[in-house]
Image (cartoon, rainbow, N blue to C red; front, top):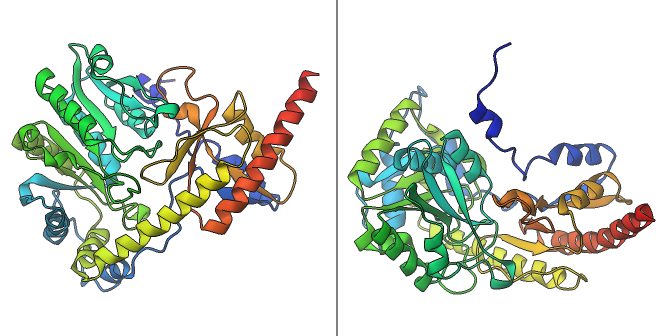
Length: 403
């Protein structure tokens, strides 16, 4: 029997979705599961976006242009112009979600065996994209007690090798909620310039900032030839299923190579691109986003307040995104999550994403989980109450087992 590729075997399963079958079984038994394991917003997708899809004048659903529909590219230009960045159509590529933009970024900057430096914990799909591209991830460990901010420059430089081609990070961070400071970004830009590296920055959560101020990597004209920006409408428009993202760079060679990748996969979704164009044409689009961000600010504050009441739970209040990476008073957070889905008594339970899946360094994150505060406030309060009860019962059950 033929063997499947080593590349596909090495690709990791999603730690965010791996335990989902246990949640399905719990629901079949009549349990309510508070899903704080995945960044799926529950806020309704904006009506102007949906209206753009419903009212699209499409008689034949043919292929969209590989770089993206002109209307969608113009919408992206308008969005970035509001942020103070003047982009040409040639500097924008519409992708099938931010996921494809990350994949294209790795493929056009790295050859097989090259390395990319990524601060950990990081969005676990980065590891999957890298392994499918035969790229090696070099993790740069950051710490909960320091709010997951970057270590000193000398420590970062110690991780660079002759095979390092890029630094990849999300800002604001998933799963950490960190918002990198201007001095941190200045340092990364200088490192990229001095060591001839690309900077791939995922800014999907750009608007989700509650402390400090977000600075876009596009703000550094001196690094324009090595900056690749990844973006998506999934969170900003509460439209994860639309699968519309974008790759942006002022480096003409990068964009030409990425365009080749785009022609191979043909095109991004047509209707959703038209929805984006309609949303940006709505005069109230900024207000819609602002209201959403304020709702998440309230959720963050409530979630952190309730987590702070639970003995043994440790965290730093996140500055952005809609995640909290926090420590639990357990040795194996994945075992605890499994137990909550299979053994926790009562009619409710809660699900988080195990922390180890967000690290590339073996042994890291064993006592951590990522919680996504994507549910309404009353559900967040109840989920934390269930978590508190679960921790007590789980540790009691372990103590009895160990006898």
